[in-house]
Image (cartoon, rainbow, N blue to C red):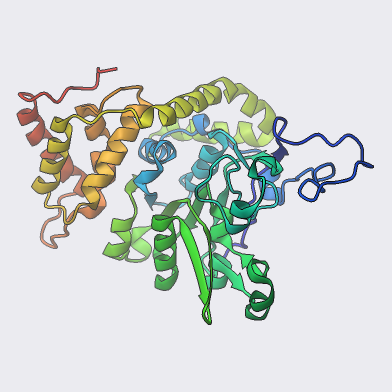
Length: 400
Ligand SMILES: [Zn+2]
């Protein structure tokens, strides 16, 4: 079992928002007292380590696209990555966090509340006055690992009842859910995680709040994160309820192509020998991807969904006999993210096609006699419906 890894991101003081403290003799204000000396440091070696660039990761296109779409549209609600070990899952998630624009957060807030937003703040930040003057820091989007042996206390945080009665919030020791707020929570081998932990996780991931209740005392804090689970289906069944709660499901395989394998190893070696130089080589591509993500996020709310697209999505789910509406909603959110990422102003057939398998393959009913691969069934249904759609107003992907 791996040791739990601290997940606080690399942090640098914000240049723009920090109030200026002229000298160390300046009478410190109550809120700003630690500003002059509080140069936040990376809190663990792991975080100080250079990250492999996202744009240098070869292959695993499905997983990479699923990660990017989640970064554009958090309403997709996470990814389950199924496949072999040693296929760059953890590397890819850290690489994604590294390519996302850094976040600004309230200094010393364990939940990294965004200073500019009135909603979704913790109790302390909500009541801080004036909020605009809170000292802030800027840092990388957090990536938190949930180790398999973690207890519920470690995940949710612990509440000291005696102190809670006398000191309120101070009696709460935040857990991993707090650390993951505004970032990613990664669980390797999620299929081996105990059921009650899975339930807690999925509830927080869906509601964006972690509530800890002990003996009539209740503490709530923001816990909005993208849940990323990975597992090898050969090593343990995944409950259908669990499958359904992850927005997308990506499959990864060990790459068989010899040339690609050689390139993967070469890049890894080059990175290990000279991380800074390797990262510098990829900086132009990283910059471009970062800019693309930023503009996709900005565009997302303005992407239109033609009725024909909604109809197509509904028909697809009916054709595939998908239970409930979660599949449709996820497919729509993923198609919106894909359109935004591709720079389009409306959802097209290409967007739906690009995300249909990711959104639906884990929601298909299992027929023990039917050996057809889920992806194949979805492709078949898409083809059938596309023929009909050709005569409708649903346009293809060239709409910008
Ligand atoms: Zn806060």
